[in-house]
Image (tube, rainbow, N blue to C red; front, side, top):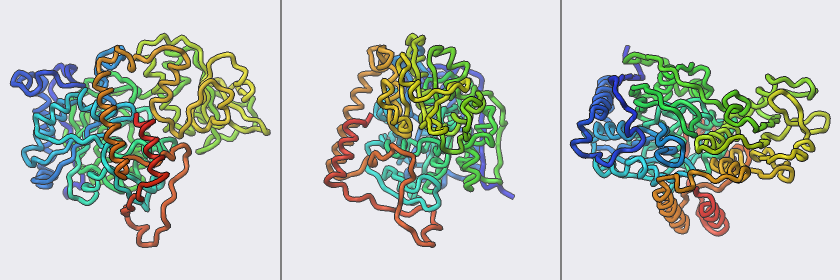
Length: 548
C-alpha cells in the first residue's frame, strides 16, 4: 500500500557552511558565488531532496503554471545588529531558499516570497538584511511583506481557542486551493513551543495583534487551530545550519547539514523533532496536533533519521544558566489558573511546587521575559544588576495574596512593595501591583519588545540594538518608516491590516452562533466589518503607536 505522507531526509556533504548562512554576500548572483563549494553542496542537497519527494508525491504537477507562495522564517535576521557575535542562525538560510526557488522555477514563473517578521523587525528590513530582496530580483520572484497586506477573516467552528482568524488576502488563495503554499522554516529550538518548525512558521501569516491574542498557556491549541483553515502543501526544513538555544533570542549554530521535506507538515515536524534529539510525544504542540487529527499514521520516511542532539531551550528564571547570567535577579511567581497547584499552607511550598506554579502559564509572559533577558545578555551588558521580577495574579491563601521564589519562600504584596530594588511587574495578571513596582508591562502576552526595553530602562543602560553598534540600523529605520506609512495608508482607505488590540486578557473571542451544519465545517468566511468612525481611529492609533 502506498503511504499517504512522505518525509524525505537528505544529508548535505561535510563542508564549512558557517559562511553567509544569515545573509547573502555582495557577489551573490555571480559565477564566483555559484561555484563556491558550500553553494554547490546546498543546491545538490535541495535538488536531490525535492526530486525524491516529487517521485512519491508528484507535487511538481500541482505547481505547474500555478502561483507558489514560499514562506521563509525571518522572525528576526541577526546579522551585525549589536549582539556579541555577527551572526546567529535565527532565520531561514538564504542559500537554501535560493536553491528552493531555483527548483520551483522549473515549473512555474509565478513565485511569491511572503513573510511577516516578528514585531520589532519589519519584513522589509528582514528582506534587505538577509539579501532576500536581491535573491528575489535575481530569480524574478515577488516579495510580499504580509504585515502591509489587507486581511480576510474566517470563523473556525472546530477550533478550541482561535475561534476566528484573520489572514493576509493572498493566503485566501491557499484556502481556496488556487495557490500552492510552501513553508520553509529553520531547524531550531524555541522558548514558547520547544521547537519551531513547519506549522509554527504559520504564526507569521497572521497580523501582529492576533499573534498576541491567546499567546499564553493556550498557544499550542491556538497554533493547531490554524490548521483548520490552511496548511502547507509542502514543508521544507532548512537544517543546513540548525539553531539551539532560546529563540527568538540569539541561538548557537548546530552543524546539522540536513534538508527535511514532506507533504504533511505535522509528520515532517515530528521527524525533524526526533532528529533534534527530542521526543515529539513530549512536545505539547506535537501532541495537540496529533490529538486534533492533523497527523498521519501512514508515513514513509525516506533517508536516514540520524539524531543530531540540540540543546533544549531554557525557559526558566530559576535555572542554573539564568542564575549564572543574572545572579542578582529574583523571580517571584504566583498563578491560580490552568491547573496550577492548590496552595493551602504557604509554609509547605517546595521548589517542585514552585515549578508547577510556573508551568501553569508557559506560552506567554515567561518566555517573553526570558527572551528579553537573553537579549540583554547577548548585547554584552553588565549583568550583575539587582532586580525583582513578579509574574502572575498571586496565590490567594486565607484572604492574603502570595508570590514565591525558587525555594518556596512566600512574599506578600506588602513584602514586594517594601523591597529596596528595582521591580518589574510582568503581564496583565500583575496589574494590581502597578503602584508597588517600578515598571509594569501589560498584555497577555505583552508586546515582545516591551520587556527588553523595560529592563534597559530599569538598569539605566542603553540598548545596543538601538545604537550605532547595530550596523543595520539605517535599513531598519528606513523599513519602519516605509512599512508604517503603507499600513497607515491602507487603514485610511478603510482596509484592515491588523485587528483591534484586544489581547490584554486570555479570553476566547466570541463569534456568531452557528447552526449544526456550519459547526461541521473547518472554516466559514466572515467578512471584516466596515472600518469607520471610532473603529478606524482605534486601529489607526494602535498602528501609529505600536507597529513596531
